[in-house]
Image (cartoon, rainbow, N blue to C red; front, side, top):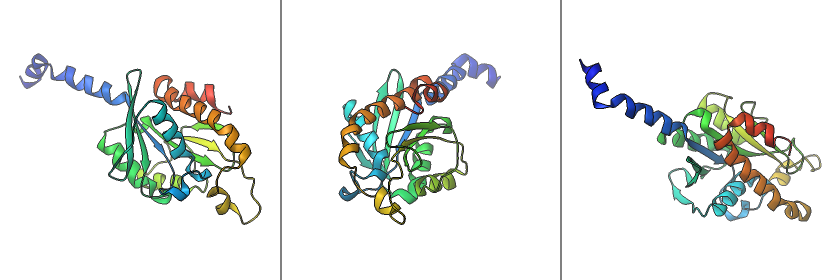
Amino acid sequence: MWKHLKKWLGFGTVIKENEEDLMKKFLVVGLGNIGDKYHNTRHNIGFKILDYLAKKEEATFETVKLGDVTTIKVKGRTLILLKPSTYMNLSGKAVKYWLEKEKIPLSNLLVITDDLNLPFGTLRLKTKGSDGGHNGLKDIQDKLQTTKYNRFRFGISDAFSKGRQVDYVLGEWNEEENSKLDERLETSAELVKSFALAGVNNTMNQFNGK
């Protein structure tokens, strides 16, 4: 009787609509370190891409639990942009909290990070993979208990001498990099929107290596 009553009351429709709404919601996490001294460093490219996207969409970040957050709408999709305030090596705590709080499926998570193994400005979207020695990804993997989550890697190259890796990733962009950065940020913002609109596979085909 309850089964028929639920149907009559329209419960099934509500549940279906809620599931459809959740599939249109995305969590986009830019990795970085908080504080002015890190603002323009290579390691903070995740923050920089989200700042660029938010400004383009006229959205303002608000400091809330475990990070700075804003929301943008892209053709019926809701993108929650998160810059964790936990420092890089504890990024997983913020990612897990906001995924659960907003009831976002893991397939709709996108993590943006720097990558030493890619030439400067190279974009690469992947659906899984190792942490590659990146402390932010390592903590996300640990907190989510999986390596199967979407990550968008932005190449910062490995143009540093032996023993200077930390100085390099925490260093600021050089003059040549800065001259190309705006175009790379624009393409990165388009990649993020494509991820939500066209799906991960189509976005990989369109943007990877560009």
